[in-house]
Image 1 (cartoon, helix red, strand yellow):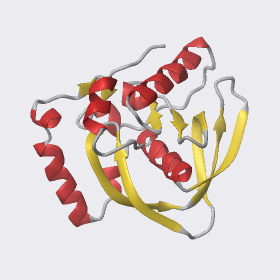
Image 2 (cartoon, rainbow, N blue to C red):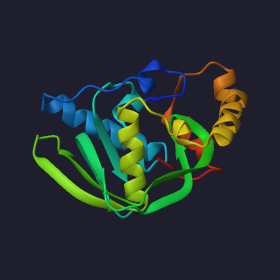
Image 3 (cartoon, one colour):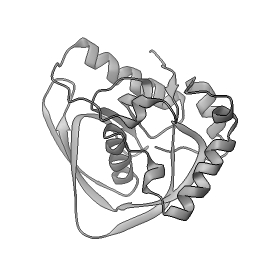
Image 4 (spheres, rainbow, N blue to C red):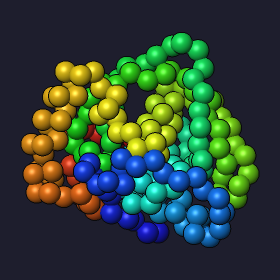
Length: 186
């Protein structure tokens, strides 16, 4: 088990599009293990590789009902139903805001061995797939907020202890501690 430090809002790796994975080896397997261990230690339900400083298109998830990983993920929205609900981010600890996302998606990608995978996701898992894929595209959930809410969220970020201290990296234990009031999130 290797728990990695979590990159925070302000770290450039979070705003860059991650690279496609083209080598399926022990290093990739270790990355998935590190992501999973760090996600659990941080009390999250999802985590993308850029959140631990790795610019590769990989994410892990564990919603309580479903757990796994996807390499080189893409998704398609299924139907027109949407869900609006509280969303947070391990890279923006302590903050949660309502975000509208598709209710159902079909996720596709490959596993750590390069074997194709596909699954339909609904509710929290669909939210997680969309949130983590956004991370891989350099998009943070704050960018999905309504303008007035985004302004409020950015003020909260600027007023946070970690941002005011200039932190762009935090231990998983610190992230979990700062998230205790807001609960688990993506």
